[in-house]
Amino acid sequence: MTAYFIFDAEENLVCERIYFDTLTLLKQLIGGLDLRNPRNWVLAARCVRGLLKTSGDKPHPALTRTTPPAFAD
Image (spheres, rainbow, N blue to C red):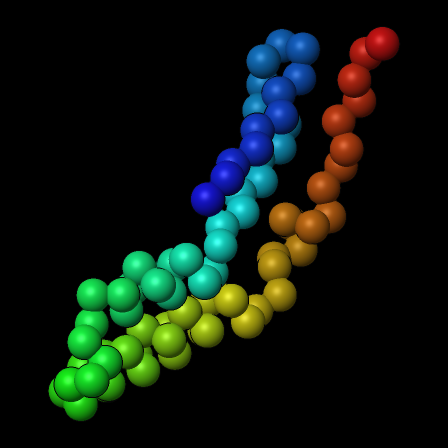
């Protein structure tokens, strides 16, 4: 995960952007499961389904329609 923060001259938070790697998150969720054991297949499928639910929606408009900061020269 990486997080970027932009502050103005008065040190007020102007923008925050967070990025994360979905594949790494999936590896961490199901990495400890023994997928050769059929009892763990249901749990692995639930993890994948939950991860797909969080990544399929469009972002909220308030996150994409931001006003760029006016920096002084």
